Image (cartoon, rainbow, N blue to C red; front, side):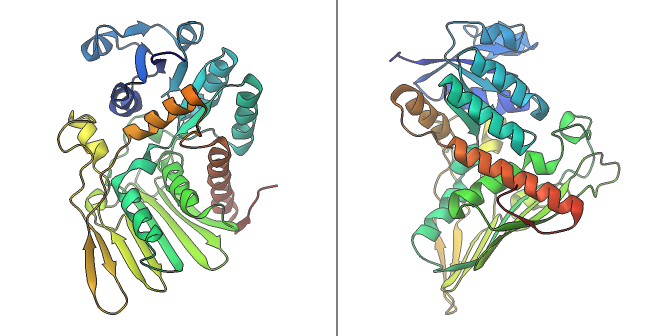
Length: 349
């Protein structure tokens, strides 16, 4: 075992700068050593001891690097992760895992062949809203669940000139926010029997989808996943982040986790107020009584702490490869459903 896992970060755009670098640097077992980017000045401002690499290949060929983190546009995830695995590195790849179920399965098989750890960055499992709703479910407050609804709504009325919205492979809200919604649902309930979806581009000038409404069908429960880029007040609870109806009551979590806002503002794990969420979970007990349950704090840095433990001691990854492939299957089933206008059964053939 080494004192710290030496990490190479590929990409220093929004994902690398806002999420990966700060969360990695908050974990003592992780040592962010090199970043592949053209933004050398920004890397130096972050930490002058971090080396700036000219390309991803420079990181892959560096024998001192143990873990590679892929934080690049979605269409590059699979080829870069495959190259890193073949170079003998452990890999964390940002969501989406891949652009297709076939790619996801091939990448999982390659990781097994190479004997390396491969994890998808589903950091939203460590959000205050999800942790709080999961705790309420596990406490048995709602009893048998019949309806679970999860929204990830934002208000971005103007289409921006960026790869996430330009219509290229891997762009669009379903590849951007869909993996978070699907991963959280599957973490709670496992694979559904089928998927029914409507995915559309509704803003003027949209080249990629910016609205998705996906229903996961279970034998005695329906799970509604919704993402929108044209929902004023969405991030502030204009539509509830979570709503759970059961035979014994209802849970409502109105507002989105605040860690992304905190990271953008410069707050870091360990700082006072980090992960705090003053928006409680509202519990309706079915008898007219309402109880407020304080929200649990968010802790996205725990994702990388668990990855470190998995690499150093063989403990389970925070998101297993089987779970990552299952998420990709639902992502693809929803695309087929929306495209063909039909319910799609799982598993996909």
